[in-house]
Amino acid sequence: MQHPRILKATLIDAFGAIPKESIWRVKGFVRLETGLVLVNWAFGRYELHEYQDKGYDIDGPVLLTVMGSRGDVRYSGRALAKALGATA
Figure 1 (cartoon, helix red, strand yellow):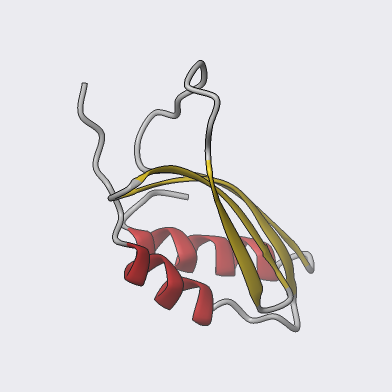
Figure 2: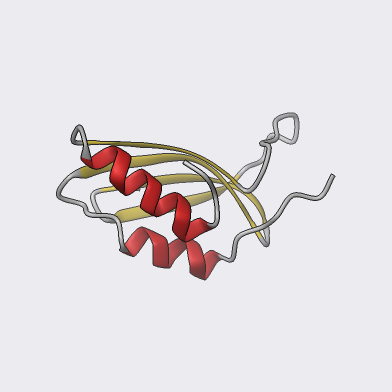
């Protein structure tokens, strides 16, 4: 089954909209046009690492956990999901 893919530029733009004052970390997997990557976003900085273990896959293009201030997590998580074309 082919899963939708996200453009790297779209992901980076979505990261730019995350409020680093109230959201501390975003971790998980994103399926980019180049393949599955591990995402580590913290306080406005991010790292993307190609996922090497081919024994694990995700359903859909995004599987992320958003950590931060209570209340802000729900709002910012939904905004991030919308920017990536995913659901919260």
